Picture 1 (cartoon, one colour):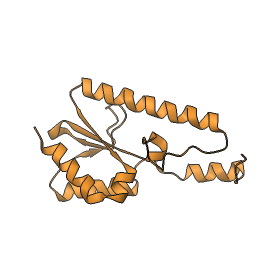
Picture 2: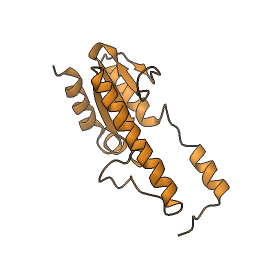
Picture 3: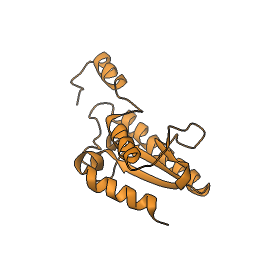
Picture 4: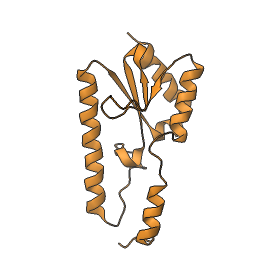
Length: 138
């Protein structure tokens, strides 16, 4: 099936997608700050450049978009109908990198928490309650 947009328009659309400081990242950061947590963002010297790093808790948080990181069984993890091979390869690389970075962080002693875009958007309070439980458990 052909793309409904021209290649130039599709490229322009895709270039507008943010990879940091997204609205959901900011929402989670504000929540954590309001609860007294202090953190660093996008720490470059850690594998995968985690979205949020809480050194005191030896914890990193990744806030993953369902589309780009292929959230299993999520309606937002669709595959474009044009250039399917390109997209599947791109998505597979993202998922492999996610696994590799998670394993590296765990082997370095970090607790890794992954929050999904759909969870944050649909049920923010429950997702944040789960996050607080994970952060404060021993």
